[in-house]
Image (cartoon, rainbow, N blue to C red; front, side, top):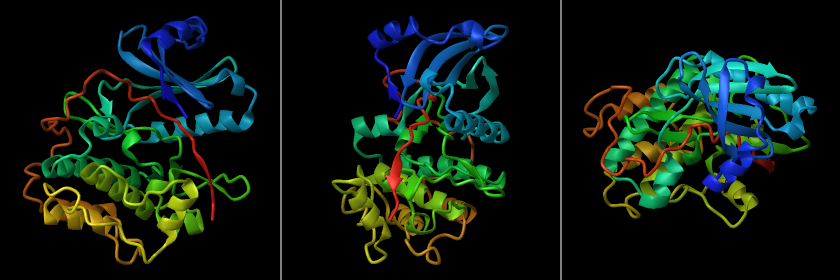
Length: 325
């Protein structure tokens, strides 16, 4: 799992980072995140002086064909879907020496997870604004034949200009040629945001992304995921229990309107026949909400959304391998 580095760690890391000359046309500065799979640096395009985020395969995986292909695959997916304001933009994919790399836009701001850590919950207006942005980004991805597969607060970035973006395409797959790499009965993903049909079939779909959107909005509204437990297995069992429904949102946060609660709980229906048929249907219902007074892709951040500090969007590529049931 990638972790953001402290300033002290960044300075220490700068002495061992991949030489800038290995990424043609770019200068690398501080390492801002790292993990078992990849490292993230803030960088600069030499000609335009534009600030970017550069994701590089970790040196220990340079000879690992599987991890090499993972990063190249992520880059290929990202380059297909770089024309929407609510999805992180990929700028370039390449190979420098033995290391594949991805150049992405650098987003100033905070993740939804960081905001919830401070705020605990959002109010109704903020949840609606968040729902619009997530639905818009996911709708675009699905229209391009891509499922995100890992929508959760850690993978939602909010910038000072009001833009809300989905980040981390490390799990994203094409619906036309899904390659669901499993090792034994393991399944990649985050248990608290995985639809029951995904756990049973191990096949991602637009419906499973919609369920993850519902989980994310539920957590934004209440401060906790709809199904929690002391272990991944306990959470997975709750997700698979078709008789166990998500609890009342308004009991935990009375600022949430009945309309918003119904919207979220419908996205969280475990039976797909009871869930919204598509993200498009979810968006149509969302537009009836009185708190949504425009359909602009750039959404002004409501009070309380302003970031405490500047972070990169590229703290992505954490990979959890969960035992299937």
